[in-house]
Image 1 (cartoon, rainbow, N blue to C red):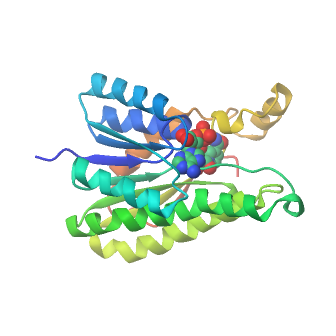
Image 2 (cartoon, helix red, strand yellow):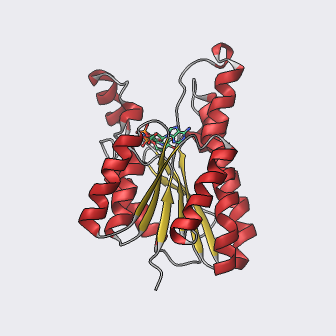
Length: 244
Ligand code: NAD
């Protein structure tokens, strides 16, 4: 019997890397992507293969490029037939005033954070619909719901992911493909490495749970969502320690 497979974008570090470990532990074959750290991703994939006796395929490239995403899914089709679970995780942040943001930075934010989700879903969905089964989980943010000052493009891209998630869930529910998003609060990854100790303490005090979640906590939740009853679809689930 074909083993289940998952494709995770942005899997070289942070939430994506932790998600790869969680799905490997669950016995999934994995297609893993990142943009720059190809060697690191390959080494990590080999560790997962050895520890969990799974198969992996690494595809290094920019998910903001539709052509790259098409090539990655073509390789995935050769590798495992098609993916059962898609985790759209790759993302970048930009902090700064809107009036100082260049058009090129806006485009890069939207391509990396939102167009990538369109491209990966477009490539993943035909197999899922044919199988009448599949799970898509998009990694979003509290800022996509509430908006953040100095993160207008990021908020817009994540808000776009939220609307995309709800709409695609309606389109695919008749085919038994579930689409949900996890809106993260503050997760302890390199994306937040810019905070100094005082800023970090201040932020921790604002979060009712009192700490930045570890990537593994998000990853374990993503795995649980992949096993949730199929009636759970079209939801934007906040994972933020009660922050917002
Ligand atoms: P991270 O910076 O630690 O890792 C980002 C990953 O995305 C890396 O593997 C990187 O290679 C990959 N990536 C970046 N640009 C890419 C591109 N163009 N093509 C392919 N891969 C690319 O970030 P993280 O904190 O693990 O964030 C993962 C997701 O969670 C992102 O979508 C982010 O917006 C979201 N998120 C994070 C937080 C947080 O507090 N860390 C909060 C809310 C949402």
